[in-house]
Image (cartoon, rainbow, N blue to C red):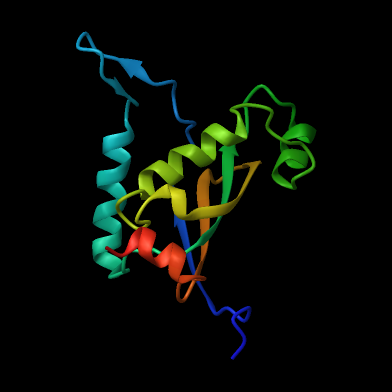
Length: 153
């Protein structure tokens, strides 16, 4: 088998919550920084992972996140239909802040660390059914001894 032939596995997961962007980090009076709500997200997903029996991923990852935001009430009926069909796109929140919310949530729960993500895609659409669809593609084994030594000690 060639060293360039890699086997991939895939996990798909849908979270039926309102997509939320990662807020700016806050500081405490003692000089520490934190992101509001990040701990709650992590606890929520950790419970789900335990129920599903997924092992922690330590190999290189491609991360895909599609956020479906609620259709604004201020749109007219035609715009609402076009938004649901994917012809009108959300301009806010920033797409990178959306993906950051979910990579942070998975860090230390399903993903060993978010640094193992080498490729990421974040998309955002409107829908009458707000949700976050996550697809994780990961290598069955490490791509090199060099990277394996960085993770497995």
